Structure formats: C-alpha cells, structure tokens
Image 1: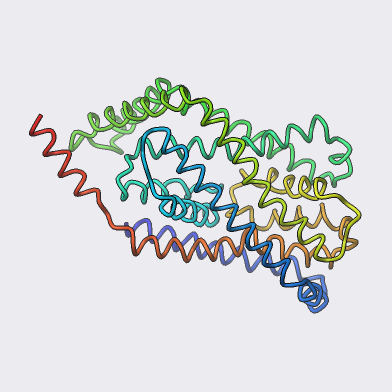
Image 2: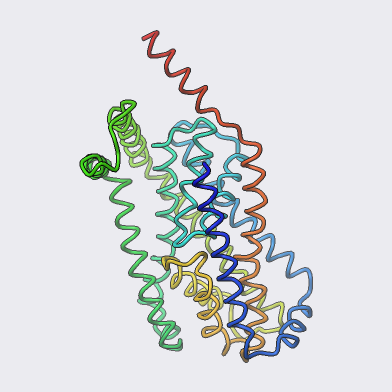
Length: 356
C-alpha cells in the first residue's frame, strides 16, 4: 500500500506541475483581467447547471456498473457504485492515459466482497463502451461530418484521426479479452509463465492454482455477459448519454456567454472532437493538449482568443478540474470508510473447503 501511496503522490506532483505549466502557457500572451471579467459575467444559474451535469455524468456510470453487476447476480447498493465511479474518475484524471482508475476501483470492489475476475470484466466492459462512444462519434464525423472537420485547424485534424485510431485499437484489444476469454486466459497464463521464467514472479501460495481459478470465474462472467446481449446494448446506450452530458457543458457555457449562432449539436460535437483527440494520449486528463485544441477549435466560434479562453475556464474547469476535486474528496472518504473484508472472505473460503 505504501508503494501505491508514493506512486499517487508522484502522480499528484506531476499533475500540479503540468497544471501550472498549462495555466502559464494559456495566459502568458493574454489579458487575464479581461478573461476573468468575462467569466464573472456568467450567471450563477449556468454554473449550477454545469455542476449538475458533471455529477450526473459520474453517477450515470454508477448506474451502468450496478446494472452490469446485477446481470452476473451481484447485488450492490447504488451508493457503493457511486463511490467506485468517483474513485475511478479521480485516479483516471491524475494518471497518464487514465490508467489508474480501474485498478483502484477493483481494489475497493474487492474490499466489498466482489471478486477480482468479475470486477475486472465488468469494468473492462464499461471502459470498452466508454471508448466505443468516442470511436462511434469519431467515425460518424469522418463519414458524415467532413464539412465540420475540414473547417478545423490542421493540427486538430491530425490529433482527431490519431485519437480515433488509438481508440479503435484499444476497443479491439479489450473486446478480445472480454468476449474471447479462452484467448485472454491463454495470454495471461503465458505471460505469468514468462514472468516466472525470467524470475520476476515466483511460484508461492499456490499462485498458479489461484490464477487458474480466477480465470475460470473470468470466463464464467464473460459467458454470462455474452448471453445477455440486451444488457450490453442497454449500457452502451446509457454510455452515449453519459458521455454527452459532459460534452453538453460547453454548449451551456456558449449560451451563458450570450452566443446563439451555432446549434447545440455542433457545439457538442466540437467538444467531442477534443475528447476523442486526447483520450488515449499519455497525459493526466489530456492536460495541456486539451486546452490547446479547445482554443484552436473554439476561438472562431467565440469570436476571439480571450472569449474562448474564458469559456474554456468554465467548461474545462467543470468537466475536469471540478471533477478532480469532488472525486478526490469522495475517494478520501471512501478510503477511510470502506473496510477491508478480504480476510473474512478468505477465512470463510477456507472453512468451506474444509467442510467440503
């Protein structure tokens, strides 16, 4: 646990350094006072709407997790799923390529009696659907939205196509692991044997046997999910709504600042382009590049760099920075209140084996 805490501390320090650099790059050639005045002119009611959209965005994932767990006959209170979601978003926000979210979610799910193989496959499916929304949106833009794409800066177009490609690869690989569990088992067992061969892992505490049992649970969960295609379809639709709750924040800011020339679909898709472009880049929350692409895309829409920067402070402020703060608070509360039940589970498992 100490290693995890040290790693999280390093991630947090890197995040702060990146944040300071991003702020400096944004404001070094601009009138900060003018930008601040533009932000302060926004009616508080619109800020409340933005905050509500952020909370609904996170809680939507909680509903998806609860629904998928129910398909494998695991009943979990919604409040627990809300905790898992906030923990996942916090660690995703502070780690490169959002790599830290799932491991921490699995950590707390295991503490609350959800076995690791099942938690892993459920969260992998959530991630596949999450990224599939970006892929589907990006492909849809490429096919039907060339007018919008061609109006963008060349740098934005490059990152858009790179983002689509990286997300397609990620979705394909994760789908392989979720829906072809025999292949997943083969790769994981081979990887484990290789690590033993080069002496990174040692065979102890029946590790190979426990791995085999875990993979059998993994296969069982995978088969059950494949047999419940309706659940996968329903949660994919929910994920589309979830993603667009976050993208819609930019349109709320657009209206709040008195603009009306563009419709909500165009503004929402422009924000989606930013997310598609940076989602797989190895930066916490896509920080730095997200702000740059936002300004390149929205400066013409908002009539200049200063207004676009003010809109970004609010839009990006809620969709990332406020989310980080709220998630950090709930993650801390979760860490203090969620007790470790794994020893009790192991003792019960041992009694059952003896009785058997």
